[in-house]
Each structure stands twice: as C-alpha cells, then as structure tokens.
Length: 264
Image (tube, rainbow, N blue to C red; front, side):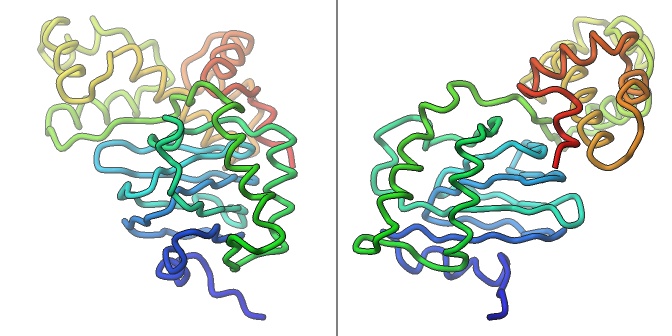
C-alpha cells in the first residue's frame, strides 16, 4: 500500500472525531500552518523538528516528544532528512480533565513511551476507535502523558516583527561565540541597559539573559544534529568556555546530554 503522507492526510485526521488517527512518516518537509480538532502527540526519532505558532518557534530534538493541543494553529517543519515523526492524533473529548492537554509542550521521551509509540506503527494511517480491540492501548497511552513529565522544556525562541528587536536578535546570533553581556550589546545599539532590558520584555516576553541562553542551546542542538563536529567544538562555538559547563546547561535545558542526540 502506498503511503499518502502527512500533508495529504490532514483532512483525514478529523474525519472521525472520537478516534485516534495514527501517522508514522520519515521525511524532510514543511507542513504549512494548519489546525485540527484533535490533540497531537508526536515523537521525533532522530533529527529535528520545528513547530511555529503565531509568535514562537519551538525546536524538538531527537528522542523528545511534543503535544499540540486541539485548535492551535501551527506550522510543522521536519528539519533533517529521514527524520521519523511518529504521530498520534487523539480524540479531544476529555482534554479538560488535565491542563497538560491544553498547552503546547516539549518533553524528553522515556524508553517506555518510545516503545509504546513505536508499537503503534502497525496501525499506520488508520483510525482506531471505540470498538477496536487496540483502542484501550491508545487510551492508556494518552492517559499516562500528564504523569510522565511535569515540566515542559523551554526549547523555544520568541518571534517579533519589531525592526530594532530583529536587528538585535540577528546581532546576537552572529556573535554567539562571544561573551554576550547586556552592557556591551546596549552600547552597540546606543541604548541604555534599562531600555534594552525593557525592549526584550515588551517584545519577546523574555529577559536578555534567557534569550541568549535559549539561542545558545538551540544553536547547539542544531549543530549536534546537523553536523559531525565534536561536542567540545560546538560548546566553544556557542560561547561556552568549558565542556562541563556547556553539558550541565544543556541538560538543564533539555533533560538530556549533548551526546544523547546522536544516539540512534
């Protein structure tokens, strides 16, 4: 049977509102802005995926999963060739039972969850609903999600149309290997530290230090996945003076070590 692919399957997802629609796909592609009435659980097996909403871009590295609540308009990009995206689109009838189901989140995947999601590949491109003997397995999978991880990982960069803010963000990206402190950046843009700090809060809803840290970590994730550079080289290229400090910050940010992203 020829696979129809995720883009072609978008209209099919909501056809049976009380079911779970299963889709496993290996590709590098862009799924344009869309929405569905079901919640989406997707596990990124190798590579990298990007989720873009109105004002944020989330980065999902290998061996992590994400939940997208029903009704959220988003764009999905699989950023590395041959990345496997294993997705389950769940009925939303009981989503108000736990706050987990109402917000977008990125989480490290346990071995148990990975095995359970992999098991569903046998139902690829099928709706599994009430009455199907496999439905209870999928119900159990959905019900366990709120208890697996209590905190969504902050692997995200905010977006803005503010012209000056965009110039500052571009400057930080191009100088990521250097020591970036608010005093030097504000002086470069002929601003006071207070004005720059306020600009970050008003336009990005994030502090200068939080933004720089997120930028360093997301750049590191991309380099780990997309290149074969040694971890030590990557640490220095994103502005860390020691590999140990980089690794500890990376773990706090992603709940995994840099080398974990290269595991297959």
